Image (cartoon, rainbow, N blue to C red; front, side):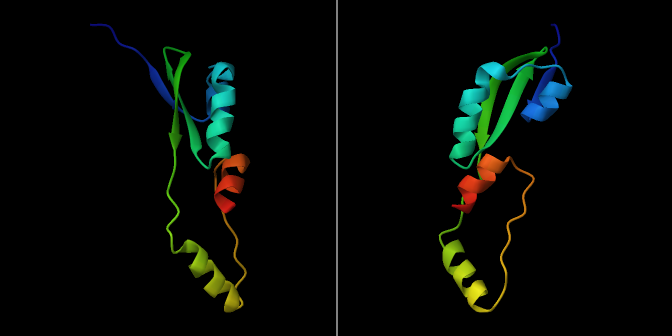
Amino acid sequence: MGSQRALVGNAHWFAEQGVDVAELAAQAESLRARGRTAVFVAVDGKVAGLLGVSDPIKASAKDALVHLRQEGLRIVMLTGDNRTTAEAVAR
């Protein structure tokens, strides 16, 4: 049985690895616009798929933010995610 090399990661890391993700770029951007993190999958140096990962926002989050602001706190969102994804989540 042969072996295959699988990679999982973001577009930037794939570029560093020499893997072209252009054929899935539009689908990745669509996932990001809906608040999902786009995670690419490659097998033996060729892009093989795309995963959309999300962390659901709790129903109580909006009220919690309102209360924190009423207490005089400044709210910021820190993320290592793509800007498009972060903006979708912030909305």
